[in-house]
Length: 254
Image (cartoon, rainbow, N blue to C red):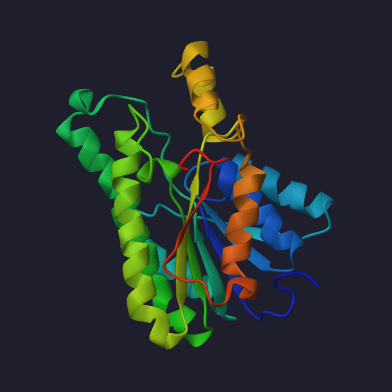
């Protein structure tokens, strides 16, 4: 039996055209969920994902959304929840350069907080009333670096730590309404945003070798590995799991 084939309503993926977001859209749809995903600017990428799902025999839909706009978040989520909303996956986030904190400007850090933390709160604030109606679930994609800091990753790990704190707060406060909230922390991946950073030269071969040696399994993971964890936590099979952070990192944080 598929994970979501008995759940009425929609699953909403915020940031569906990124590496993890795209893999999550495909996995949710394959597991029987009716999926709507958002994209910020790349309509072409959204149409490509829709076509790929069509080829796989699943149907998904997309809507443009800038999560910095709280009113737009409310409108998109209200529309997506017209037939019920059982899952929200927050997989949005900018590509963050690898920079020592001493070289991060105040504006740069403020922009990162706005993009990741305030954006997440805009989504949660709009979605909670609908999730309460359906014993719904929130899963935020964060980073394993919130548990084992990776040098030069503070521009990502700092804001994502705040998102994880909000996830725990939601779990503590909304459980009485049947709402669960968890986060998934990707480690080093060989695809998605990590592949883009590698291609741009943010990691030299020495850095990649050191990273590999720091991973218990001695290999990088994939966006599909992360999507599997996201879908499990969103499903009823994880119905007694809330307020947790699951790192999909090959043992990096051991």
